[in-house]
Length: 286
Image 1 (cartoon, rainbow, N blue to C red):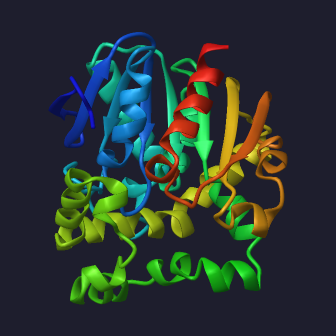
Image 2: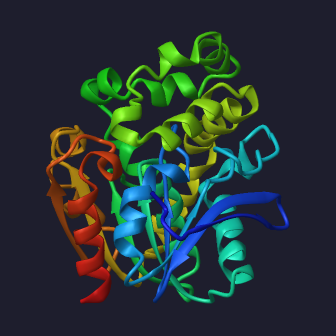
């Protein structure tokens, strides 16, 4: 994975970002989810590299990137704060405009990038994600049953204690066979680092403390994503089961949305990288 990609540590005003970069063509940033690192994208990045310059960072608070400073409202872990850091990162790398693809938690930061910096984001792709406020306002007993971790992770201290007492048991669905050994070893290092665990949990706390307020402000002001958008979801995960057609929800947040499901479980970049890479390529090159 990541054939002919360069591993870099890049400076931003908030802290260092670990990333891999390779390929040629229009700049395209891939943002991972929880509890992954950028390594989850390896097979997809290789498939995209003939058409795009692919940038795969660890999100702030995850993997080998900096851990945002704590505050009572988790402001530094907000998707707005992370979007600002990643925009700065891309500019430092020489990319004034770029495509952005986000999965799971990464889709929230990808959405915020497109919303806050329309002049920078050419096209947006989200995978298995909706705006935070949509999740919270639509929460019902099925959401509470299947996505209970959103509310547990919002609590102070206890999530970190529970996870760090036995990280392998908490994240018991990690698979070297599925992910590849290097990606597996990388995520193991992350979940065994208490500082990274805290950074990942703060990403969730920010959703219930401040991210939903940013979403509400945009919705109340009638702001929408201006670029073309593709909404993807995993057919063997539960996003569509809980919410119906995710693209119909995104239609309220973007001016030009298309979307469809991919035959995969939640971690589609690992489970069906061929179909995901094809969907990304077709949309970005149309």
